[in-house]
Image 1 (spheres, helix red, strand yellow):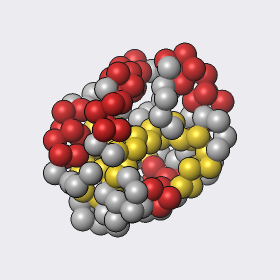
Image 2: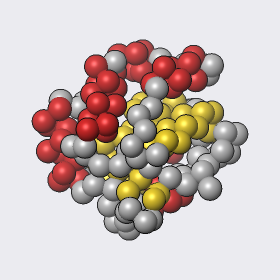
Image 3: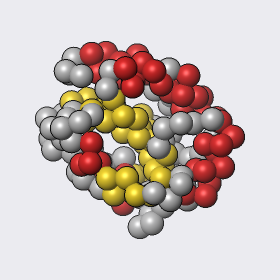
Image 4: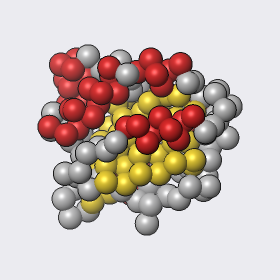
Amino acid sequence: MAVEVGAKAPDFTLSDYNRQQVTLSSFQNDKNVLLVFYPFAFSGICTSELCQVRDELADYTNANVQILGVSVDSPFTLKAWADHEGYKFPLLSDFWPHGAVASQYGVFNDKAGLANRGTFLVDKTGTVRFVEINSPGEARDQNAWKKAIETIPA
């Protein structure tokens, strides 16, 4: 079952594509966080979605929102993808234990071994303010993310 709006966001620490540790709670009292779970690097819909985030990154940073992409890919795969696509926001590896954080958020697809498309807006207090869950083949409407961001104080 997915984490629900109003719940405390499960804390985690994962490695980014530079193998640096990123902890969700480190953003508390400083920035809102948009967690974007996606199935796999280099796949069509994932690339399209994250390229849109890349191209509109100023909209998020101006709203005091930190984007954290999360997949079950290895940090090495994420590094190659970030370099290839020019992503300047953290892509976190939920590689091992495989899908543990995606499971905490209720978006791990254990039959396929991937994270479903889950989007969670976590405010500065660590409370989930928005949730969107899509199946792997279903692209997300990022305008819904921006509308949710508008409802919380920067």
